Length: 219
Ligand code: ADP
Image (cartoon, rainbow, N blue to C red; front, side):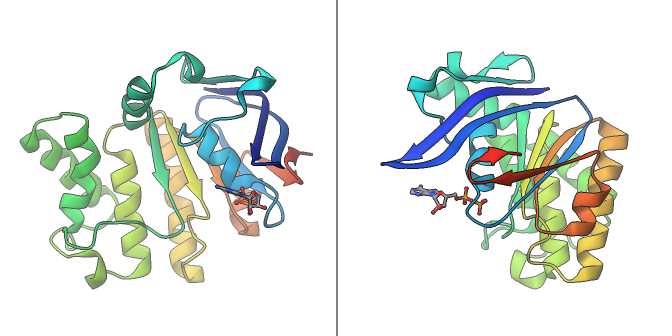
């Protein structure tokens, strides 16, 4: 589902990724751990096509059967919207919209009709136990609820791949546990592939595979 080889990334003269190779099977949950500054977020951004590796290193990056390198900038944003869902440490919900509206946004960008998008968003919010929170705005929700809304938003286009960067970094222990369980439930129900960057030992231990990144490499 994810295949990358020879991923190098430098910012100006600073090498952040120094040759990352990674293969993740469909339906697999991989956790990436490692000290701060090791390059985990940078790698996740590249796997999510939000950033590009250095060209000169002739890398490979295949996601859900497509070579990201071959896609134009316009194609890549469409590809990302359809195939990849993101969950960040800070939920990044839009404050002026309700939970339901926030969840719908990626579907509307994907040109789904509004009625269908609303129906799907409601189903997801129900599934995530947020049926009574649909019409609340983010600041009226707890941290755990906000994060579950963000998960629903990540799921609305049925992406094959979910990338999460410290998804429980901002949650208390109970809410974190609930969110972690949810990832596994989603994998079992929808067969999604997950790459999780986390400092949470419990989450890393639950994953199918735990990878450690140090100084720009997976060790
Ligand atoms: P981690 O997620 O493991 O903490 P990051 O991928 O966030 O590590 O960062 C790795 C290194 O790359 C850090 O030293 C960081 O300062 C640097 N870095 C990340 N993004 C940029 C950027 N856009 N410009 C310059 N340096 C960056």
